[in-house]
Image 1 (cartoon, rainbow, N blue to C red):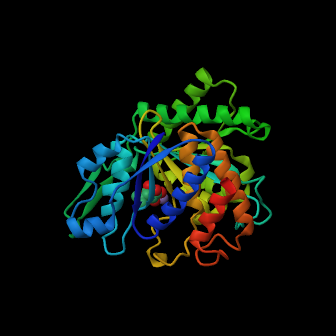
Image 2 (image 1 turned 60 degrees about the vertical axis):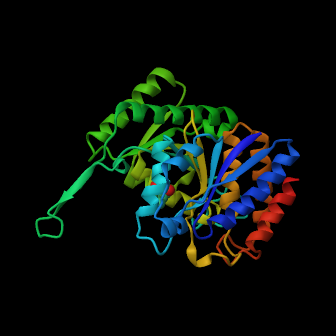
Image 3 (image 1 turned 60 degrees about the horizontal axis):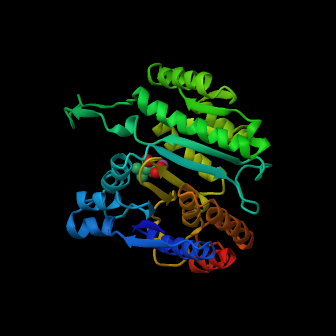
Length: 356
Ligand code: IPM
Ligand code: MN
């Protein structure tokens, strides 16, 4: 039995999470696993009503769960930054979810904007360091509003934060290499910008090479500057298997990755604390204009559910869900909201059916 905290959140978040729960229930039942859900009312509506964002009490409750299943955060009536910082980033920081795992994996039948590339070429995973760098929030502003205004926002990293992220990446690469020959033939990549970020970049590159030399001799290492990496993601996605990078670069290249992998409708991610409580989410956002219309694509949320089960050690359930998704996307006309040839709930029903 697993205890799952549910944060539907804003916009279409609750709708896609409902479909995800439907599928998880079906897949878990088939495998004799029980999930116990607890709902948390967190998001823009609560903030507008009560002024509360992510109260300490909620955060402490969340610590008691096996995992968190999150819909989306972001409300059109709330100034940008408040909910993102106050809920999503706060949860990542406070629960020390230092890995953001974002697979870029094109399923057969799903369209990619890259000409002449398909599921064989688009199958990698980005590990984004999730609690450091510019997101730490160090910096400040003064003389605001005057012609002499100054602002700074600092990229900070310490060796331990870098090392634990790299370790996760090397371990994942090792697992993938053992799983498929295709993966083992590819190097892993560190993405940074050490030709300009000579302090942070140097720290990452040295840590990467030292760890690789000492502990993971069998793993081929490569390095790419972040600007070049965006170019190669498009031109040669088949070069990549495991990509590890710092927080902001990871934020940027994973949106590109999501598009390559079929779009926001099918992209999921995990905010992972390997020794704590992790949080799984579709990465497409709250899409408020589609709220309540039964047109949003729930596949990303369902995939996040599959990632959650994988993380909990239930590989069979995770694989069952992924297999069911693979069947259903073949029956969909598009991955985009409103053009799927099916409603949100119909897709959820179908995936659930194929799981059982
Ligand atoms: C993401 C998002 C967040 C981030 C925002 C909403 C704070 O873009 O999860 O990628 O920048 O990490
Ligand atoms: Mn982002």
